[in-house]
Image 1 (cartoon, protein in one colour):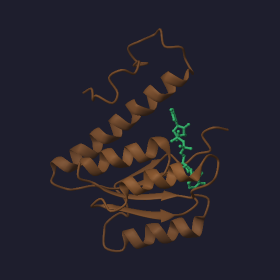
Image 2 (cartoon, rainbow, N blue to C red; image 1 turned 90 degrees about the vertical axis):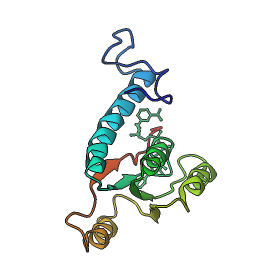
Image 3 (tube, rainbow, N blue to C red; image 1 turned 135 degrees about the vertical axis):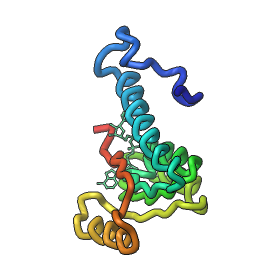
Length: 145
Ligand SMILES: NC(=O)c1ccc[n+]([C@@H]2O[C@H](COP(=O)([O-])OP(=O)(O)OC[C@H]3O[C@@H](n4cnc5c(N)ncnc54)[C@H](O)[C@@H]3O)[C@@H](O)[C@H]2O)c1
């Protein structure tokens, strides 16, 4: 499977000329990992079950896109982000604004280091289900450090 958003990226598994550890290779690996997760979630969907995914760092560059694709596939996304000021917060708020209001999306301003806050989120979402989330995609990071 090759989507338009990934077709121009070098595939590290088939292209040995992509230097190990390069930014392009890391990006390609991240996308391949996501495609694999997306495939598993699709299998879930084939059983007519929409998945509920927790996506951390959802206001970030990668996670906002991941959330967008999951929503487009018809899944529910619970997004968390602490909206830190590692770079211009307005960019994060703009990404969130693209997601908020879309069916199936909810946002919680939360730091993933806040164990009590996370436990409460899991408790709330697990109340009427077998498991709180079908997938957790952890992309919260101080990526530029
Ligand atoms: N951007 C790329 O090209 C690229 C390529 C390969 C891998 N990655 C990896 O993907 C991940 C995300 O990168 P990005 O470029 O989207 O970074 P980003 O900084 O745009 O997004 C990270 C998000 O995480 C949030 N965050 C940080 N710490 C948090 C915490 N403790 N609790 C809650 N939210 C928190 C930030 O506010 C931010 O919105 C990183 O692990 C990065 O290494 C990124």
